Amino acid sequence: MNKGIAITLIILLSLITVFVTGVFILLLNGNTKFNIFSIFNMGYSENLIDSKEIENIEDIYITTDIGDIFIEENPEDKIKVELYSEDSENYFIKEEDNQLQIKLNAKKKSFNFGGKRNRVIVKVPKNYAKTIKVRTTTGDIEAESFADMKLNVEGTTGDIKIDKADRLDFKLTTGDVKVGTLNYISGDVKTGDIKVSETEVFSAATTTGDITIDNVTKRIYARTTTGDIKIDKANIEEDSTIKTGTGDIKIESLKGAYIEASAHTGDVKVQNNDRHLEKTIKITSNTGDIKVNQ
Image (tube, rainbow, N blue to C red):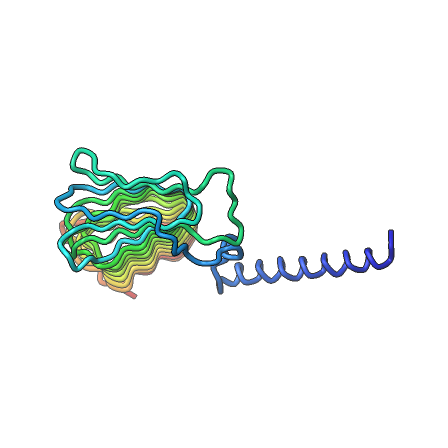
């Protein structure tokens, strides 16, 4: 082999090794969230391919394969939809049986490395009280503050971020869920964290990931296979359950229910436990510590 070529290959392999090692170190330390697609992402498309304004519609259905979805406030009492893409040939905005159907798929057989991402923008009135259903393969969903809105999401890869809503139902394979204030949250994610600021009812699980809740005021069912569960405040009004396979459970302040806590491998520390309370919360961990009211 030519000596110059050999030296070049050695240098390239060294650089690749350093890069991969650095990425893994960052991931292990938890200092970054690495997404290989971000290397090739050049921002969002500004090419408006379709738009429509609608009044007096019921539920909204959104379907995408690759692209992000934004639900924003419209100061006018109507719904406005905008679709942005560089090359999509498979899209529509249509009314059907008093429902709004929205679809935006990427151009088939187009990898679009270095290209701009598709996006769907749905603007609804502040008092919108219907359901928005989202079915997506790869893409994030972001929603602003809508106290009466219900959101139903099924996705393969992507995050969910909501400022405020009435209810969120979700099913994800990979992605984080971050929610501000709502009344009810229910769902499942295989790989990802779930974070909630405040909710009345929490009923969700993650296979690999942590669950963090600032305040739950009525009922809770929280489960992780591998991951910690941390709750700042819980005021229980109905029988509840919290369990982990491998992970710690920590509740800073729990009121309203008798605590049944057990860990197969791990320490259990519970204070201020009232056996005479009518409601019960069962807290179990296979491998991990449990701390309540510490």
